[in-house]
Amino acid sequence: MFWLFYPETLLLLLPALLLAIYASYKVRSIYAKYLQVPTQRRVTAARVAEEILARAGVHGVKLEGTTRPLGDHYDPRSKTLRLSAPNSVSVAAVGVAAHEAGHALQHAQGYAPLALRSAVVPVASFGSQLAFPLFFIGLIFRADTLLNVGIILFAAAVLFTLITLPVEFNASRRAVAALGQSGLVTREELGAVKEVLTAAALTYVAAAAMAIMQLLSMFLIANRRR
Image (cartoon, rainbow, N blue to C red; front, side, top):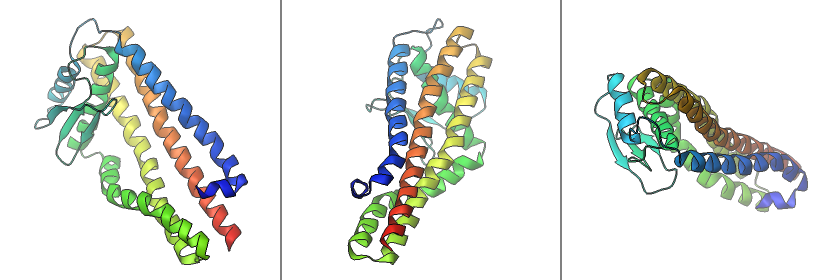
């Protein structure tokens, strides 16, 4: 990557990179730990999600499994909630299922940041794919227009990571509140669920930090070449 030719930008990226590595390790280790701990109620992750949605009066959400490890997510386009361990009764699986149900609640209740994130997805995806190639070509040919376009496109991707933060934090708060009210987990298990979701949230913070530092590096590199 072109950052290798600009050592000062690597210094900017290093803290964010270390945070990303730590966050990835943390979420995987915490998830693996609590994946081995069953809840006392022995209610499956899929059932927990269904119960949370039913209690909130949200209907029409499909539940599916996914083979991708930690690939749990809610797709607002098809109103589908996908779980990697739907039949697990572990604290980790239940916590993640509740979190994804939180996203479904956001969608059903018109949570503005979720709607904004969904609207930004196409632009962010397009920007993340083209930003670096255009920026690199701009560096080679000293084309300021391409440098600027690359920066603008990547800024859209950065915006997506920033919008994602309140969406994820809010979904976790909804999950913890719903689990606490439902009685599906004990007080001790609810503390463990918070630990799992906090570790997961750190990965989004790390992604946002990395994206911001990359954008700042692009600004610095562009200014040096002009």
